[in-house]
Image 1 (tube, rainbow, N blue to C red):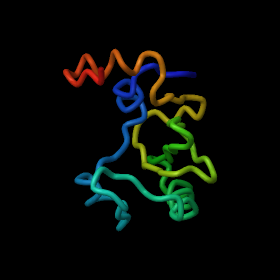
Image 2 (tube, rainbow, N blue to C red):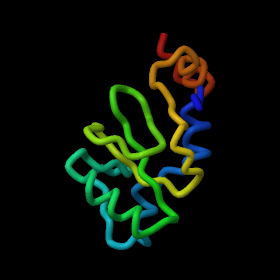
Image 3 (cartoon, helix red, strand yellow):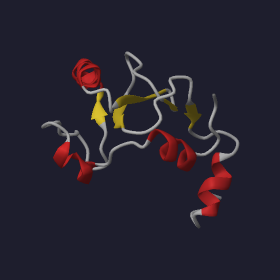
Length: 107
């Protein structure tokens, strides 16, 4: 299921941001925005197997996937809808509208 807005994707998948990690079982993200680097894949998948309230969100080739993707560049943990068919293409045809809507028109 393709999502046409990063805001909508985040609303559904509910990625955890860095300042929310205090209560997440000692996991510490690699960036201040809550991302984990690719070498943490196994750790995140294992964590989600043990903690069913969480799921892995992957970023690979400018696409956010709402599931673990081996070889992805970055990962996040999500606490919302875990529909594995959901994805969002960065730079897709509707993304310009979304950034313009926020007052950050890239043109």
